[in-house]
Image 1 (cartoon, rainbow, N blue to C red):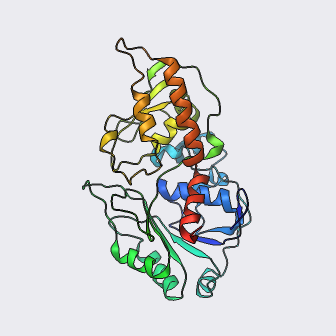
Image 2: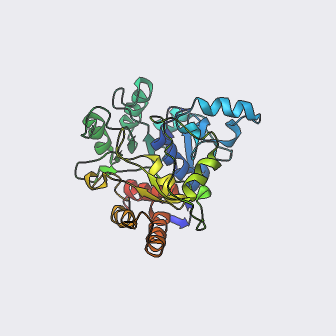
Length: 318
């Protein structure tokens, strides 16, 4: 399957909702594009991920980011524009031109949405391998929500239903997925620490940062970034903390279901949280060793490219 690192022969259609702030769909799109190049066709164009969608005027940039969840940090406006053939999509689906068709994001309330659901049924009826990216939160329930009607169709086509907040036992056609982090934004050095905990900045607590670099720097100079279960267990903040060379301080991590955040280095994070001494200082020698282990593990398992490679292997059985 793999010709060389970052290049495969498969052609995948990612049928999505266009300009969408769904973090799971964004992370998968980023990883698949980075891995497959023009063999990944996003339809319609996921404009929020392309650098050309960011206005050149600073005030316009700020206005746009103020309308976006998380201010559009990390994933958005990261991908360069490349030539993608988005013509004759319906005919190509009917002719089974693609090796697999991925549909996402999936919402707990409206599922794929009326239009995308029609395309999903059309693609399956014409013998395509169809997959679903279900990246929704838990919302009002602490239990997973799996759309078994979609899972049934996916299974019949030999595809995979990827579930972010998975608690059930994985099967051939039901697999966990999680958020991940783009390699180009990784902090590849060990920054000097100045404080114990980073400022918390979120939709619930209020965004304290309007600039992505300032936000990342806050984690870089802090030993720990506080995080926890919110709408769901998985959260982009976990990965922003790790890849900016801090350790997540995750008090409820022992309650994390086994198949949710399935690649998260939970045992290493638990060790890292124990590096605070009784007098409120940090055991820096132990901390530095564990932080490096978390970072090295995450570079191999939690980047958008590594998650895309995992997906390709699941879909095609490699």
